[in-house]
Length: 267
Ligand code: ADP
Ligand code: MG
Image: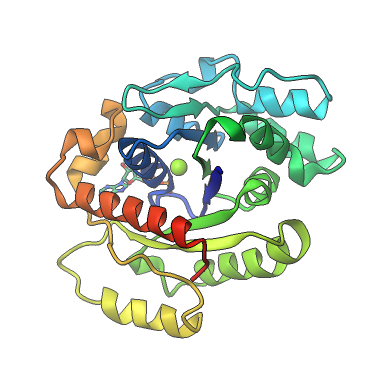
């Protein structure tokens, strides 16, 4: 059984891509078969994994989606790249920004990515979809294809309207109209600065706001320059700083998500 997780937050710079890389490679380190999908026109996931010029890659996620829209047959293995730390990647690039417009006039426009995921699913235990910073059609496609959504947030951003908006959209629009089975995997606090001590208070507020209906992962990911270096190096935090707190944080997240999937439940 393959589990599909969309890593989503309409705000940019909250560590969606970083989390996709390090959760994905974390799972691969536990012997899991993992596909990462770059669903962001910026192609940051693709470049973070060392494929430095995403826009020059010919066959990408938008190529696949285009073929599905035109009802052409696709070879599910075509275009998949391999990273040395054991994960596969379906790259994405600038062409996804055109897809946003293309999708508008397509029948079943929410489910184009779902069709692709269905075709590759049997080869993987986990598929992680790295979303871009919007709640447009391309992101909706990720939420439609996913079993659950993982929301990385910066602590300072937690009480802001954006998160509430996102949770509301997931519950009211996506779950009711597009993907009834979509679960919220949890909220991951990222780039936590150890010097500020107000995160506990904010976590309390969040728990109150969602009536303990949304899991907040036990481990937070600390701010670390070693994490920031990773994307330029094309490697995970496990390789760049294996003993650091950020690696331990992502390892703990990986284990928590594996355990949750065994329990099969939403929080
Ligand atoms: P998003 O995908 O949400 O836009 P990214 O994963 O690209 O966010 O992260 C935004 C920036 O913050 C990147 O430069 C990344 O290297 C950096 N970053 C992410 N996590 C951390 C962290 N724990 N500590 C320091 N820098 C981080
Ligand atoms: Mg990103």
